[in-house]
Image (cartoon, rainbow, N blue to C red; front, side, top):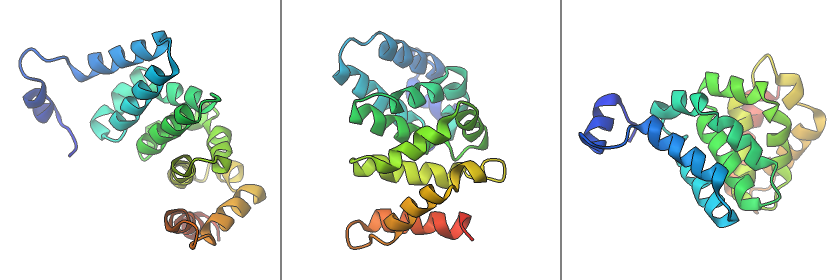
Length: 175
């Protein structure tokens, strides 16, 4: 499931493209894409790579976390979904979480809590779950944010995933 140097070498073969180079090509394609559909596909692909700890260093090196944050500011709901999905997938790593926080990502993630797209909301709750720590608790645990998460927690009949994820957030961070 997760990659290491040996597994990466086996998968790419002797003449394969190194992971960092492949990710750089994706970033360049995203930046040069002329269609929204192409940007969506590339953002989704990058978000999938954000799941594997093997790629965390590359994501930071290539500023992919910042690209995800830029996606969240777009009017395109798919880009928002894939951007916050990439953040969610990568913020389990404390270094990635720190980059996201330093780039003012917390307010952007909080905005995603009001998205009409279920995946976007799930990703936002999970991202806040992992990013929340002593240094940024006040920014995340504002009364209005806690209230939204409490509403999701109480919405088990509408969405069990919202409810369970929101309750886990409350159990861990709201005392």
